[in-house]
Image: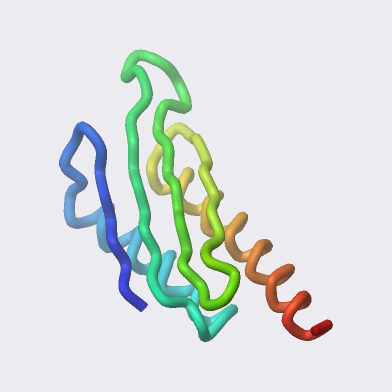
Length: 100
């Protein structure tokens, strides 16, 4: 699976990029047909709490894509939340495929 990481208005350090890659790569264990993942990391108004946003857009065959956007104090936490949301969506998608 190809993973594209975009950081908006800042440069993501290697540690953060490796963390995101590791978390998103684990989604392959839940569904084999993932084409690619696009992760966008953003900072909202730097002076506020919970100002880090992680968006994950997962391309899958037939259906198009799944999307999750989560906001937290750190990019790692936001990415964890977004990956969990995508994991739930993948579970529902697999159930739909089984029922067809």
